[in-house]
Image (tube, rainbow, N blue to C red):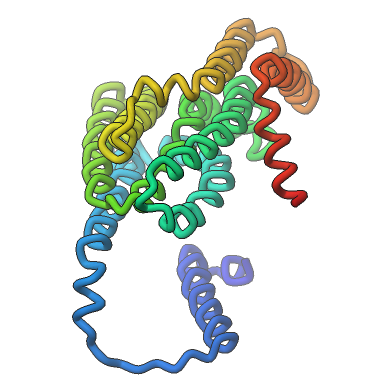
Length: 323
C-alpha cells in the first residue's frame, strides 16, 4: 500500500509478491536451519516421475483453462467489461477458496495412507462432499437471491453490471467446491494419469464454453452463463471418471448416496430463483433487504435439514471438534 501511494503503480503488486516469497523463505530457513547438500540423485526422480509428471501436466493445462476467459474478454469484449466480469468471478471464488481450498490440501496426505483400501477413501470422500454440498447450497442460494445487495455493499453501485454476472456464476458454486476437492482424491488413489485426462477434457469444455460466450454472445452476461454451465459439466465429468474409473463403483449408487443433499440443493435454488423473479424486495434498504432474503433462506434451510435429518452432519462435525 505504501508503494502504491508512492506512485509505483502495478509494480507495487509485483514487489509485494516477491517480498512475501523472500520473507517466507527466510522465516522457514531461520526456523528450521536445514543443511543443503547439492547432488543429483536420479533414483528419486525416477520414483516420482510418472506420478508428478501427470500432476504437473494437469496443473499446466488447468492454469490456461482458468485464465482463458479473462484473456479473451479483455481482448474481444473490452477491458471495462472484463473488470465487471472479474469482480463477479472473484466473489464466487471466496466460498470455493475458503472451504474447499482449506480442506483439499490436507486430503491427499491423510487419505494416501489408504491407497489400497478404496472403500475407506470413498466413504471419506462422500463425507466431504456431503459437508461441502450442505454448506455450499446455502451460500449459493444467498448469492443468487442477494447478488445486488452483496455487490453494492462490498463494492458500491458503480459495479451494477457485475450483478447479473455474479448471479449466473453463483449457480455453479456448489459444483466448483466439489470439483476443487476431487483432485486430491485422484491423487490419493495414486491415479494422476486419470486426473490429467479429466483436466484435459474439462479444459476442452471450458475453451468451447468461453469461445461461445465471447464470440457467440459477445457480452459478459452470455459469457457468465456459458462459464457456469461449463463448471457444472466439469462436475459431471469429474464425478463420472472418479467414481467409474477411479473407484470402479456404480455411478447410480453414488448419486443415491447424495440424494438428500441434492434435494436440499434443488429446493433452495428453486426458492431463490422464484423470489428473485418476483422482485418483491425492490426499493428496500440494502442491509434490510439482505437480512430479509438471508432470513427466508435460513429458515427454509433449517427446516430442510430437520426433514432430511442432515443436521446430524453438523452435529457430528461439532462432536469431532470437541473430542
